[in-house]
Image (tube, rainbow, N blue to C red; front, side, top):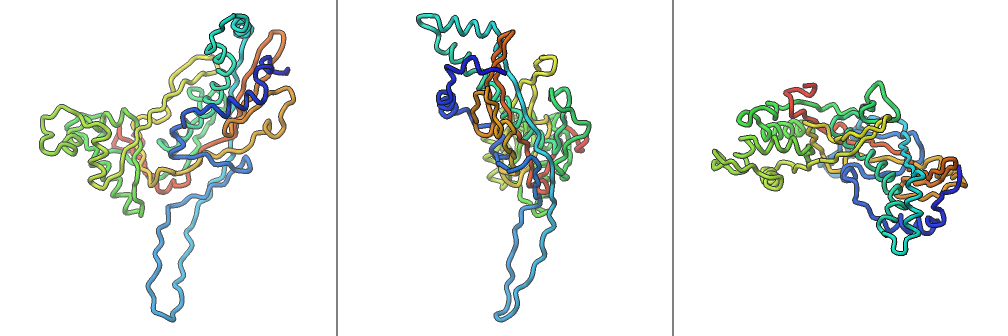
Length: 355
């Protein structure tokens, strides 16, 4: 390991200044699972339903009514490592030197060569966390296999213990005159109320919403009796307006798509939300993305130029023979769901969760 070839440009103050000034778009998972720092790699998450206790009316001079303590579940696990490496080859470095020798170099091209890999590796870590978070919410489990991860492959699913799972009354992919998406939403919300849960938000993919908005039941729900024969399909804002008017939760569309590069460096698109799944949440925030310090952050190699962006550690160094500049990003982070008992999942593509 050698010092970064770009260390004269990426001096600590310059790199820190770039990291501080760089304000990337916030990951969509943070609305539902904000970042939360923890002190150790092993975490313990206390889960249970949201409590809504009532005090008792008593006569003056009498004792206080004693209440039982709710049994709580504790989920323990290890926070895994997320790592990514990007390299600049001799060809890339030669391009950089040629830019530097120009009288009027293309500033954007130089910035892309110097800072592009930094942006790339940071985004890759945050995008992986977004994918993990939305997998946990839409499926209740995470499966790591060769089709979605080039690192660890799990033989069993990571289970977040969401037990309230069901199917639609009629698969939303059936003919539009038979599907009942509004009835299904009302049914899940009614079931949740019998278990002491009020649903505040519905999450689904754009594909599921496209099926919902084309249903005759949805058109009639939005446009009333005039919906008969109407060919216009209601948009998200209109559907949400009518859901709110009927005391039903609003819909959020989850549409994150990422590029996954496998061990053979083949690229495929990876959708973060499992198609057809609909999640009914008791609140926007139902858990956290837990993170803790990496070993490299606590014991930094002397040859590395390093800088933190949020909790992601970005490192730059080089090697010789051949000359290569490396950029890496590292984080110890993983999603954890707190309100698993209050989340309801529905498979809109089948009449049962398993399909």
